[in-house]
Length: 103
Image (cartoon, rainbow, N blue to C red; front, side, top):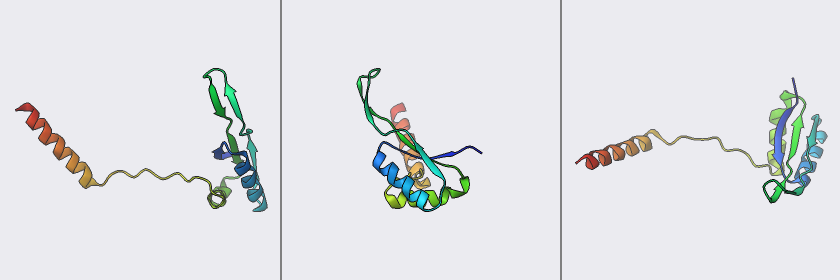
């Protein structure tokens, strides 16, 4: 199995702290990218080079996530669909508007 990309950031200081913490926990990991700001001539604005943090073993992913969140990493919030009552209410309003538009 190939290495897993676990986190991306434009903050090289955070990436360095993360790598140190992961290695201290005995997790085999590494980073790529510099996190440097550079002028992109193609689009004519400044862009940040992303620092990517990789782990070598899938079994370490849960522990890695806990360590990164403890260091202040942003956690993705899972998408939650609206409740069924909201969908029913919106549908009812649309039906009423459609009926009014016909008359």
